[in-house]
Length: 224
Image (tube, rainbow, N blue to C red):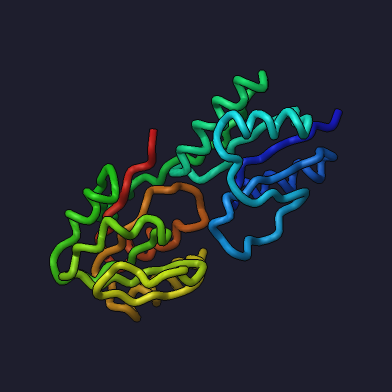
């Protein structure tokens, strides 16, 4: 029997899952937060934007006669995951979680693991040149580091000037090829990478590039 499935998406894994489920004959709707202005097409239907909290998500599930809910969001999207758990309890549906495993440091890696953005900002050495691989909504913690040059990579151009005194903006997705990531690091004379431990394969190439070039990585631990 086919199901009506809601995938809470926005990740590579969610897109691949939607394709598989559609090919199996299920009716699939993937919900995207809307942070990327031109998201890649996803198999099945797509819904853009938040639901407005757990109760409204539960209502949407009921109104659309959803029979399965799958949380395949980014590991750091903790609010929507929490809302999904509550909504599924209200709707009396099980919540299926597709959880990424965090990256693990290899012996050749130089990682400094921190708990949050504020700790990450404090650990950057003075006069460093940092590849800041974070979304625009996560940059305020670094606004006081006037002694650091940031190279900020984003998919979309920011809607307002970045609150960073010394920075350069580069547009685009991370390359899946570590050698291309290494060329970018060398081009910008990067001394440190600062990122979140988001797991998966989509952004792992920069970790490999850092390993090959012996560049330290300040990495924010994945939420438990």
